[in-house]
Image (cartoon, rainbow, N blue to C red; front, side):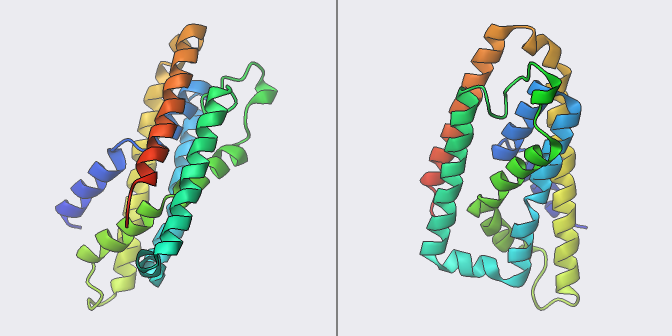
Length: 204
């Protein structure tokens, strides 16, 4: 395993984005267990991109401007939807008043998976990044690509879970102050909008 791959993976995974934001919100609003579930969902959302890279679909997406733009704007729309729900106190940072109001693990995972599926840059990343470490002419190239993809997913889960655990550690201090919750909800909502804007202006 090359040190360059490990370092690059850690830098990419640790850089705050939609998945990190979603996991932090889960930890702040519902604690460590919810943040781990969110991290798991974000990790599952990588699988379609990995399959696309392995099967060559990423190359098609990269070559097709229409396919890329369609996926991109679906991602933008979903991020704006997340922002709208967050502002309405019904999104990722909603603090449930009753246990029955807590989103199920399936709902959290579904939202997390959608965040990553509707991110065309993740597919492009797999298409452009992995071949640098796995030449297609190399023996067992497919197995090697799956191995590195698995490592990337493991790093994603661990780093996101750590982010979420840190957020959960200060949860009591946050939810006991309604003004802080309101402020953070607005910050998260604006952050989702900013991420949507950044995705909207990205090109292939």
